[in-house]
Image 1 (cartoon, rainbow, N blue to C red):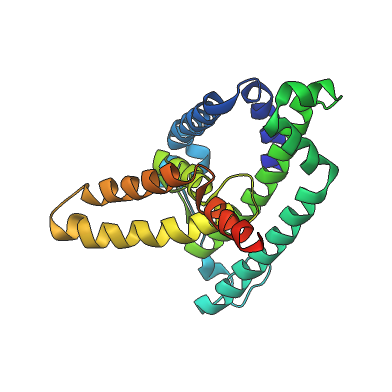
Image 2: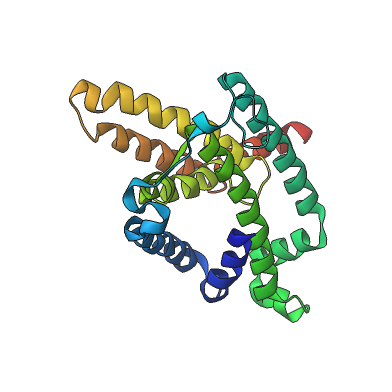
Length: 234
């Protein structure tokens, strides 16, 4: 609830910006919040908040405290399925059609009577609620919440790149982007990073692969899949 309220507060000025300016402003806002939380003693400042699971005997389904990781896997799998169902229903809803109209041409959408600002803010609130639920699960799993782990610049950029690489505006695009980027980042970091004495080389390969796919298909990996599906039909 707090995150949804905050999304309306911060979303109102942010959605006056468009395109890349909005993305940059969103990342800047998260960095400002990160700096605030790092000096706010009420939430543990830079050391964060530790969740002491010793107070509760597992299994505790209310607080998501389990002895074995397999239970966490099933919980996050349930989150994933519910998220897919919500997103699929959202795409077919009136708000989903409004957003696609805004994406294609914001001025035309406004001329059709769509309240562009309100549509964006409602979507932002829905997305914030879903991310907050996932973040709460993550906190229960790692038993600790730190500003550096949850609001860092690297994380903000990685989330944006998942959508860009997989294909923003589609249901499966960001999922594919996450499935590719997260293992790829870890693999390259292990293979070409500090372990091999070549710090930063993994980031060059990482960025190069993203640039290559983006150059081939601006709509990302899902755009490539969609093109091949159309060719087969024809």
